[in-house]
Amino acid sequence: MKENEVKKIFGISEKDITLVKLLISNPKIPLKNLAKILGVTKQALAKRKRKLEENEIIKSYLFWNVLPRFELTKYFEIILESSKIEDEMEVIKKLDEEWTTAIIWKIPGKKTVIAGLILTERVKEFVKCFSKIKSVIDVKITPVLMRKFLGEKTKIGKISSEKILQTVEREIENILEKGKILAILYGFFPEEENVDICVIKSKIRGKEFYSYEKILDGIYFDYHIMTYKAFKEFATREPEWLASLKIKFTANKAIERKINKILRYSRKNSTNLHI
Image 1: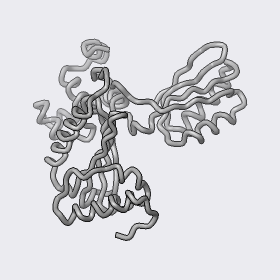
Image 2 (image 1 turned 45 degrees about the vertical axis):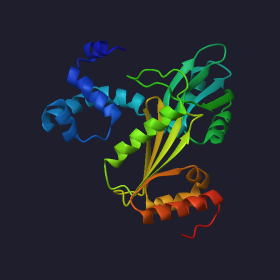
Image 3 (image 1 turned 90 degrees about the horizontal axis):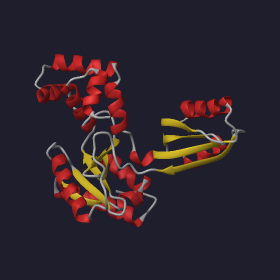
């Protein structure tokens, strides 16, 4: 849908469109920053944002552009023996109540297919769960790789390693501008056009670790923000992942020695951590 059509259908202004785009690019941006960019007061912005939320405009845009956890996104098909509505509803109810389902649709035919997108790591459990239903004759589930989000242009062709590394350099510079960083590591997977960014901080308010994803220049960036304590724990929990990372920045030599020690440990793929 074009922007002009969106404005006409939902009765929103140019500033509303700009607000939505800003929230898509950074859902956590403070209201005062948004107000400054849009040239309005914080109170006026809060009212505008609340109106968009009530009309479910922001909800719609954020859903498609900030779909959580790229690596968890799977496409599924559940094939039913018949087209009985009660069989369809049994499957849909289970999807709705027991699984984090992003979207569901129906493919009609001789055999009804319930398909959609789901967020899960439990692939085998998903297949087992729906195979137990009498009317289900087959369950298929496969990972998907996002190529386009609302408001973005589709990237065509393979991105060069040089281009990916340039984007990594630029993004790490942006992260460092925020300050109070102990270390930054990255993992580069050119065949998947995917980059892992690990940012280590002295402390994170209310937690030890969180992660999020975004697409920059058609490249998938998976961010892992953690304390040094959480970083050490990853050496035993996910040593293979940690071993794939390279140091890009450390606040000082002492931190660099500690990080290198943990990386060496991870690369040995040991089971006990003595640091």
